[in-house]
Length: 172
Ligand code: PRP
Ligand code: HPA
Image 1 (tube, helix red, strand yellow):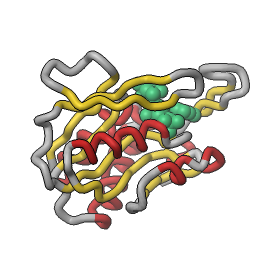
Image 2: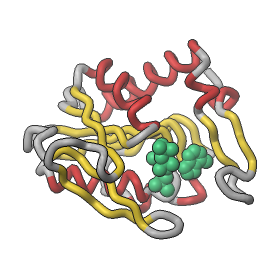
Image 3: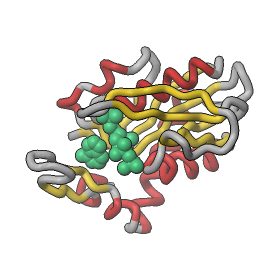
Image 4: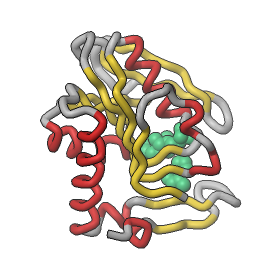
C-alpha cells in the first residue's frame, strides 16, 4: 500500500517554511490504518520476538504505540509531557527548536530488565526519541529498537539515537 498517498502535506505549518507531514488523513482511512499498524507490528516483531513493553510518546506515539503493543502481546507505557502523570516520575529535559521541554514516565511503570521498544509517528531531529531512550536507561530496561511511521531523512535524527535497530515505514 502507498502510505505516502494517505499522508497529507501541509505547507507553512506550524511556521512559515515548514512542510508538515499530517498523519490524520492516514488515521482516518480504515485500510490505511489497519495496514500501517499491521506493517509496523510485523517489522517490530522482526527486531525482537518477545518485547515486554512498547513506549509511546505524547501524543501521536500513543495512537500508534498502543495497537502495536496489543498486536505484539506487550504492555504499553506512555511517556508524557511535564506534569500530566499522577504518580512518581523520572523526568528528562530535551531540546526543542527554541528552548527546552520535559518528558516524564512513571517510575514504577516497567519491570527493571524488561525489553522495551519505542514507537512514535515521526522522527525529525530525534530529540524526542533520544530523550525517551534516556528515560528507558533511567529505569534500567533494555532498549531493543525504535519504530516510526515517518522519518524525515534530511534532519538526520537517527544520528542522535543509540545503536539499536531503527524502523521507519515511510521516508521523506
Ligand atoms: C512531534 C512528533 C514526534 C516529534 C518529532 O511531536 O509526533 O514526537 O515531534 O520531532 P523530533 O524528532 O524533532 O523530536 P510533538 O512534540 O509535536 O507532539 P504531538 O505529538 O503532541 O503533536
Ligand atoms: N509532521 C508532523 N510532526 C512533525 C513534523 C512534521 O512534518 N516535524 C516535526 N514534527
